[in-house]
Length: 402
Image (cartoon, one colour):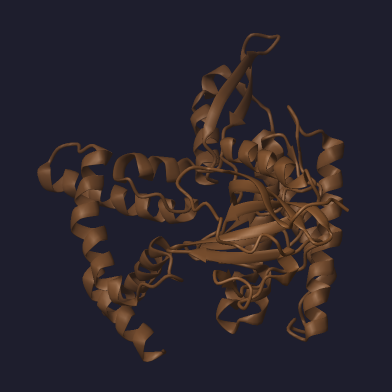
């Protein structure tokens, strides 16, 4: 046991965040409660080998995880490196070294993922039932993303993942990198090992819900891991396969790029290797990240939503582009159409939605819900009802259910 007075020994933090000095560092995190910590927030932390607590500062929440020293520093470094690779991970804020009654500990500090859902919510809340299948697709997509970037997870599980709604689907975020490793590339053996761990852990997580009595009887519990693995294998093949094309079929290069863009992947490099006969090319594509539409939307509007939300908004902007080009009888740049959409469609719609926006509402997801509602109303009316009417009806219906 280390000697000395319990409390904070050292803290390394990113700028722009609280100093966390007003927290009860003399206590182990498992002893933090609303009585011992004024900033304590009671949120479900899921099953964890280590104590995890949440604290609130102004408009932001933070997750703190207690680990043996120097594990917090190690995990913080891994998360920073994953963040630099543009992977969907929680934002690492810093790490602390403390002395508590039982000895020294290290604490990892991350920013709580706004608008996120733990997997339990998708099974325990009846309003989220339709997202269950999307959860499995999101898990497969997350594993493909991190493996493409050279990350071996080592403990892929539902408990170590958070989900955000994304234009009616889900995006998965890695929240625990305790067992992760970063390599120049992840070998096939390592990928297979990660998938084996995933299958075992996912079934274990769902069995926990079965014991709570919240799993539907007909749910194919023991088929879930295999479904994720199959989805992963098909997506991995789409992204990494090399194909042979004839020199007169060069259009297939753009077809491949577009297909990957549709899956959200940004293209980093295209490799064309001439065949031995000289009339064929070996085509291989390297991807950078899975934020193609997000990057594009942010560059022309400044909005930074999730990938599928961005795709829905870009589809709208391209519709505006086509309409304005026809009206003006000339080609119009996408950036000009984006300005029109932002000022005359997006902002007025969000203004109508402001009265139902709260801290738990993701503005971009709410906008996408209005787009779906607009389609529904337009189908009933046999005409385009417009964004404002759709937003007003959406708000009215939302209020009537509260």
